[in-house]
Length: 602
Image (cartoon, rainbow, N blue to C red; front, side, top):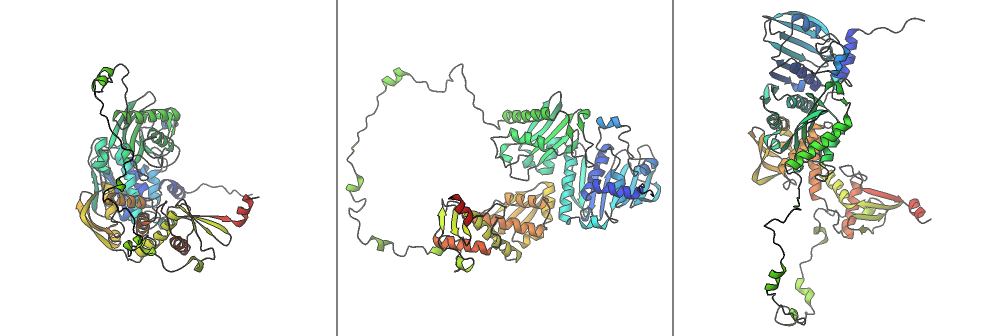
């Protein structure tokens, strides 16, 4: 039998490794900026073209590399961070695998210009698809200048799966923020398509958070500073009133490294129990410092998953630290009782003082009736009192303007009884061919209105409602750059906005149907949707606006409906196409088959 096992070429092995390490342009920026941090840079500049699809450039003023190191850095498993397996348990750098640079070079065209601190001349190295094209002496500044062009040019399938520029730019900003937040002593700049978007000067941790997410947000944070034998915890948590249903800024850093840790996230949420709703999230920025030998970061190539040796003990420390901070800043109401004595400002009951007072006496005439005397009301109700109110009756179709009647009956859509029953002002019960249908009236109307508004927005039928007084909205630098990218789409949907600079906008008009919404909350919801990826920007905007407009106009649970209104609601629900679920995914109707009903009585 012939031998069938063979070694893969380095170019193939590097492309396989690149599939795990380099997933999108944001991954390249993460790896290059972390290398710059390890190199001791005091300033890091990031330049991006077309959300990283065309080019990514990262320039730092770190210690640089020699000619030999520059060439060796692109070899697999070549690193300056560790020399033995034992070093994995005493890591003090961001990188250590030696996979990032060869993975980047395997799927792009890389130009590196670097100069060491003690060298007069530097090195210029060009690599395409993992192959060295040229290496020559170059006159350049101290540090490293990485230029990555045409990412995934030799992996067309991977390039086709990249999202829109808006989505990729959002991921880049998110990845860069993680590095920026944990390194406040480093000056970062970020430019996209030749325009400077962010400029983060070296500052304190609180000031860096304020620079990234806005000064108003930074002022709402409570500081944490706890030292224990297992770990030190510093950072900030938001006050209970900063909780949000989604999109809260939650960051964990361990030994200067960003991590995801749902277990520790639950510890913070547990500390806010009773102060916020279980479905709400509180922002936090927590920096843990612990012995490197008690954690394992060598789990995944992205190094965002970390295992702790004393996980449960740190969970308890974390919960106690957050609770102590909430109490220290009076974020939790505290009632103190003085058991030693009575304060002077509280009146004390004295029987002698009570006896000296004269209690006023009140006379009550139990036979008095104000309607038996005077001219308050006529003594006898006229027999023809109904004619006094003639002409004031409201037609049935105007009682609930949110339920227009189109003249159609349910019988035209589905054969069932024309008699409906409303249960507790929330559910509509109606007979169908196969049994009984129970409809949630609020959710059903949400689905009807959502489909209607979504169609109007898609057809460009949205109109602008001018605001009596312009509203001012402010965004963090990252959110402002994302917001500016969707100005044309917002204008097409009926928004009238005027930029004021420094992440601020004046809202002059909103689409009709949204004039009762708070503009700041509205735009925050829109930005949260855009960060999640998936649909195009236009589809996401239309979906979010239609959902908000429907939520504001839909009938509420407890509102009584007439037979005609219930008939119209059920008929339009069947016309809506999706009878089973509301826009938020909640169930609209429940069907009880005749056989199931009969079983209940057997």
